[in-house]
Image (cartoon, rainbow, N blue to C red; front, side, top):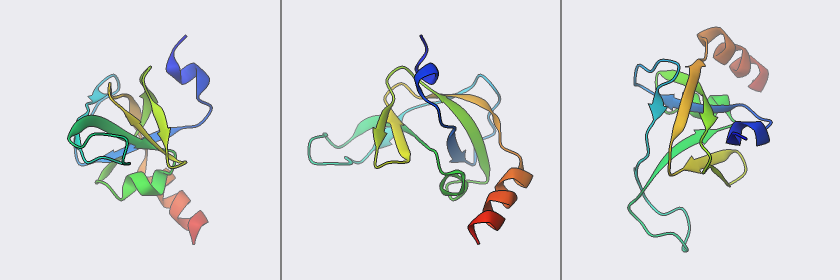
Length: 102
């Protein structure tokens, strides 16, 4: 069973990179998110908040979780394996979310 089978929410990743479906959002070095984790470990980030993702780059992608995803602070997910790109989110969908939020 894939990790995405157990997750009933959409995950998004914002970046300036030009990604295609099937590409991977690779883990990068990150600072520790809590006292129990060592700094300088590699993780990839995703969020259920499309507007938060939009704040991290000019493009937003819907991504599938890896088998190692874990929840962190409610709507944010980190993965030591990365996230696989499903596709780019249209600017119209992002604009609609902005209108809903205002």
